[in-house]
Picture 1: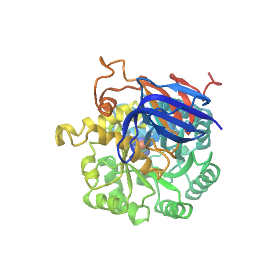
Picture 2: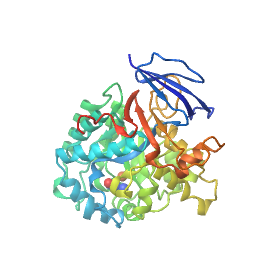
Picture 3: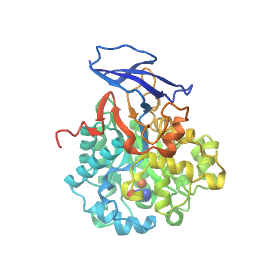
Picture 4: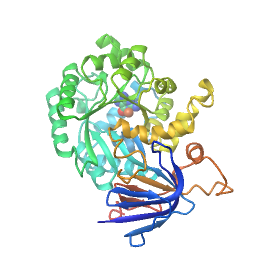
Length: 425
Ligand code: GUN
Ligand code: FE
């Protein structure tokens, strides 16, 4: 058994009572065993003095493309469909096993360094096994899958799949990686978006998802041009079409949802579909500003994601939290998306989207030990001064302030050194 005693931190629990206090956390193997004031475990295998530090639940990003990390800077200043056709698809087509592996390692390193402990990730058509190997090695918690693309005449030949092969390869990967490492790694079917998938494929994915209780992760209603293509081909809006094929349920994660019709919104609400808001990507790809306050008012589960590195040049959750709050203020007023709301989206709501709210997303006894230790004192004149720590995290913290990150009870970064990559370095 391995134990860690973290002492004397300001703990932001994000539990149902929103408790915040100066205290300790005691971890046994992968689980939080005790949280409280003045715990005493001098025999613990590791003791971390977190005086003047803040502990938060690890951040959860529910839409990431690890395979795109190394394309950063190569896809700038274009709108979605041009960006995919001119940049991203040719680059994905050129990937090999090694480039996927290192792209994923780099992405995960960046995520962990900025306090993200769980991701919902979408890979490309080929070599997804190598991204899973990077996930396995680094210790990040992930729901990931191979992209499925069996349609679209502007998709490069190298990325075009036969329906049956796309499904078979996905099922093979699911069998290999789903529920791996005691549930730290899971599989999600990942049809890229309606534009690149046949009805046959989407129906099969719907059936497989139900049969195996496996998530489906896709993009929807991100950009007006994309929506026009979907309407011209199916006669329906994205979410209406996905619902028509049986995909709209609590195991569906829809990235973006910038331009939802009232009917789409109602389906998402009624069927408990999960929405991932990607504010940085939506701005940089000129997709639009998603009406998130409206979705939250409808009690829809909205969490956050940076999307791929080239979408906004940043995999940092601090950036997404800040943008999520700031972009709503000019139109909807200062409290439409307050700091607490976006912090919830970055933690417990992300856990809900992944169906893991009993395991992660808040710091509570019995939950997995996924957390960050941050030093927020550098830029603040009076560390002991009574400030709203969550507001401080959302509006002014940077990734350099994250000192130590623990996932599943394992120290994956300590004093900004990646522990799981020690050998490589
Ligand atoms: N829609 C289909 N593929 C993609 C992608 O790779 N990134 C984004 N942002 N949207 C997409
Ligand atoms: Fe995306």
